[in-house]
Image 1 (cartoon, helix red, strand yellow):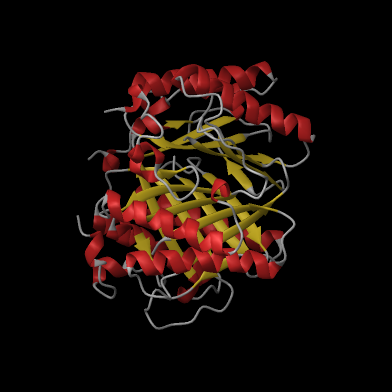
Image 2: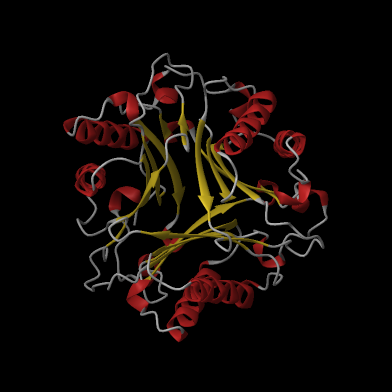
Length: 137
Length: 137
Length: 137
């Protein structure tokens, strides 16, 4: 269920781009306990200048290797769970050599009825998929 | 009002891409009763590998022709209305030969004050547009 | 914090594209009082036909120069604040010669815990960043 949009600057190899996507997914699976194949990612490589990401006043610089991650998923996770997820994503990307400065995450919530994985069915409503326990408010 | 992002893999003709967008819009108009010209779609064609969409554990395979549909629209529709919408989208795409396995939908809600269709005005707030009856909570 | 997605049609110079992004950011800074460097924008240039934006029944035509703006930001702003923001965006873009007909805005809200600006930390939760006063519900 999480639909994750990943925006990165052009110039990486396909393997590198895939490794970034894999790393983000590993963090979500580890922290949220979702199925390995509950993976929906849209990756976009963009020309320099088409991603503008400053520091929100925090006092650091990014180096052009910023990774913009936008996670759409079901509501119900605690603040602590989200914090652990962000840390895990930064950790996984750090293992690839991506600096903490370059990991930007935004998160948007919806409900179980807001997903259809195929066949025009809302599988969390029909019961074909169980709503993740931790995502029940 | 619905803003619909449609991500597909490269390799289709422009007519085919347009037909997919048209099909999705027809389903929304039919199910939600919105005006025909209440149409806002952003289509993106992506290289193979930049859309990663597995099965969430449901036990089926997609064939690379997956269509990722993300609908941003006003809150207030019932679960049943959403289910009918998803079925209609899958039905319309099915008529184009797109298998049910390849129709992924995510849905995100906001309010009437969250839209400006032009001129910097919030037309559902000013009354220039009527809030859809079915979308009143 | 606002993450702003900007979709425009191809064919503008890089300077022009940057000017559009700058104009939108100026409006947000002016109206919402956020830090100048609280800037996160993803710009996408798209082939003709990949942005479909009609008039929602309002009775006007766009001229192909439509700018689709999607703002993801914290909840808590009033309807009036949003209306002023939309007007300011249209005003800034108008100063660039972009007609009011061509300014489409959608808005999606989340919470302070839904942002990580770097290092895997949720800086509005940790207190490294202050939640904007106007964004407290």
